[in-house]
Length: 298
Image: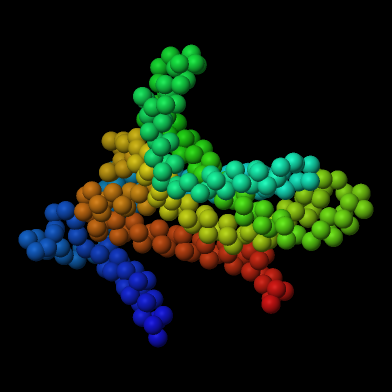
């Protein structure tokens, strides 16, 4: 009974409240008690998809970047973390415990501290530009966070630096649970390292980590910390409505509520994120091998 009450209070009621707000004009110009908001039907939806040019441009621009970001952030960490785990756990590598410890230390540093330090270091007068100029590699500061394309590349690379250690540790645990007999049998049959990786290691890791990868994709789709702490969504653009070129839909939603008090538009965006991420996650999750063959592990 307590679990049901908690579910209603902290999950169902916020969703219902968000849906209701999306059909009102609850914004900075309609704040109770002075000026009550009213029902406006589908106005917010039509503003995003058809009615308001700048809001439509912002929504679809940020949606495209959010999808690209989620794919890059998920699979760069996944692939590189997998390869790094395989390399560190190889019998040919010495001091494996030392390498694992180095990555654990990187994880131990609070993420927001790392992101804020990197953000300051990449400023025009930051440590990176100063060092590059001192070395004579550049004559003027590079706009790491001021150029739209460069800023997007920076957030992807920094996310790799932060996320790969987590992925590497996850894959290290998976590798330790692969039966050694499989490798011994494959080696006796004449399979080389590449063949053993493709036929044994890769399928096993894909099978085990598929559900977690879907969760990681959803997390990256709504990855507020990396974007907001590193670039604050910038560089800002006049083509967008209260957003910048590295903003995700979730950071745009945050700015609309905190900076503009535009709760109705933010709620509409929140509903779309919930529908898109929820439906895609369930569809992909139910098609993974881990779910289709779950009866084999019971």
